Image (cartoon, rainbow, N blue to C red; front, side):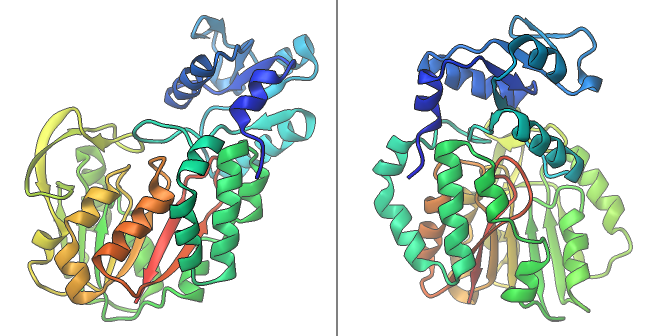
Length: 345
């Protein structure tokens, strides 16, 4: 097992600097404070500097901090899958020690060496359930990444976005697709690229700004139903914090309608369900029990939002319906976002 990043940082004598600002940096600073780890500067890409300060540090450039400190430890404080950003991260990694600390998108906790030890039994169970060597490699790499913060583990297990559809996620022209967390319609568009036809599409998106973009993007499609609601474990209302993208989540903000997968299907057909709902996946699965038990739909479940997603989500599905083949894939992104479980009947 890799050395725990936070314990390593406590012992390091190199200056520690942060790369990036915003919510991700706030979470990393909270973790540094918790472990009593000091940092010595903050830098951002040139377009984000503009004489700003962040947590009492004047924003600098990488080159300026490199000139000031020479060798240093760089902590990546944002996420991206954009090729040009990943290229820049690799460039800095070639010159400095660079780590991308794993902090949860939603909820609390950290995936430390101690956390791994506490949940080793559950993770070993999930590992034993994985259906192919690529999935087992991916789980091992992501665990090592979470402990060490080393992006190299994520590069090692990357899959091409279309690979699941070619390997095991065999869709046909009779699918009834439920897109839970449809965002701006990008995953509906991706689904349409994978099939020659379909029976029906239901797309749910609670964020009103994203829902409007979704509505425009899918206008003209036949046999599609749109829902501006949270999909969770109960019907009624839910507090929802809308940010128009990543970071929108249930649990705070304004009250909006909530529904369950079981209420959406109403006993009707569902052959493929995708869930990427900013940490709400576990609750949504609980609200999909009847549908999963009766129909055994293919499931694509994002598993990178909460600290326990790697084991809690597959265990939850197994408790609802045993017998699924389980796959895990991570797509180009640092940190370990864009990581999904696939449950295939």
